[in-house]
Image (cartoon, rainbow, N blue to C red; front, side, top):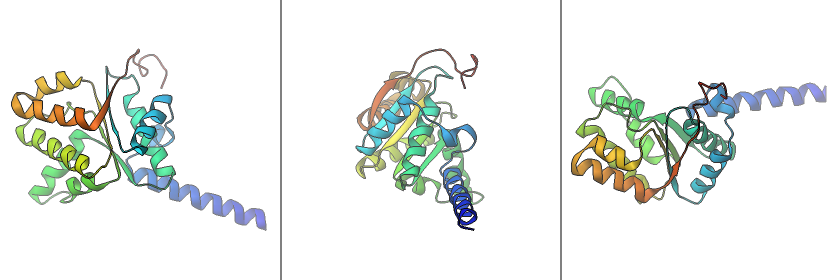
Length: 192
């Protein structure tokens, strides 16, 4: 009988962990993501420092961000991985009344936020302003942010354009350690 109780306990704990990881935005392979870069990003986050991971598609940026979020959650913390597009869509839909009215507030307050694929969202002045305000607020509160992008910060500033784009990129540079991620596309070459 004791083995049966241990098995039931282990299964219950596994279900709780899986639920917590799903709420953090991790499912599938991301729920078990592990990489040297991800462990480095997690260590930066534990020190209160963000990370800006940039490079070509398929090089492991999102996998590393997912690893950091998973590690944070596994150590009892709250974290969230969300694409920049999804976050902005949720915020916009919340303003319209048919979505999550508190999406931006939760993103601003979660102890570790991983914002994925920054720069792939449709560029609008409103979107740049929201992202900039989010980074400002998180930095002022001492909360680390992990950002992944296919663009360097200089390219992102140009893509976003004008003073607002330059200001947003500068805010990110001040809040995050910049890490270039290179190599072949792991998805195209069968490495995950």
